[in-house]
Length: 338
Image 1: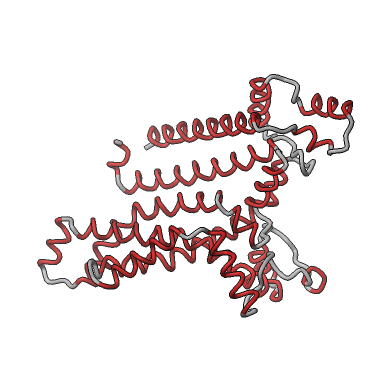
Image 2 (image 1 turned 120 degrees about the vertical axis):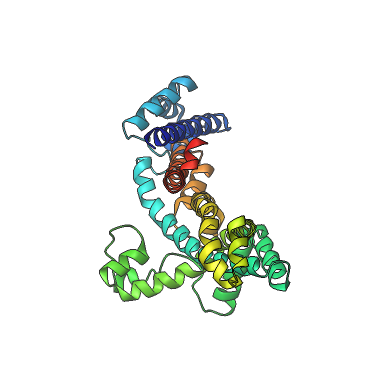
């Protein structure tokens, strides 16, 4: 088990380093001058040259990459050209908002996708199965920005039931100031008992979380259906069925648990995927998270910030993958032999 964990950890480190190197090199070949972003469009030639020396932009790309990797090893992820703050500090501000949004979306996706997948497997080949497959295909195919705009138009502008943007009502900054501990308004309001902010943050979270949940819900429904149907075809299920147990008992007691292993793995990866693909959702709903930070950094050719966002997402992918691999290897020793 120790050898298996060390092997997976080493592969994860290689993946993170490879992602950082690739992203850094791509960001360096994009047309544009980062010194202009840092010094400002009105900077003189002398100021731009001084800025390039300050940022190390006059060095060869390989040397810049080596310096950046050494900085990461020391916990220094560079300084944002756009905000003039350490990238790690910016990420600490932006990441919690995205984690709050993606976590809420994934909870909704599990609440929707798991029951739909079970219904589809239970009524395999019948009308409910066809309907669930149709809904799941739509869910994984809908453009998130289009769905976000439609929900915003209907529920915020037309019906006025939900707010259209932001984390919570900005008027509450003055009437009910929020003490922040984890940089997540919903969690902070719950911890501090700030009911006005809690209600406002919850209502602001519904629409973006629903948009984030649509793709994972469709994917999970299809995965649960496929996994349960595969499990129902195994010999021990046929034996249990021959003993006279009904479909409901078979699904609940013998088929669902073995079928959950691939679902758990997909859920972990979908979390990381959603974290990296909230750009458009955060842009539509003015959500101050990682996606908005990355989009603004890309527009400004802010290489340290772009590489920092890529690095944090890669770390999330690797850590979640490692946790799932270790959990599966602990449950099923056969996994260690792969």
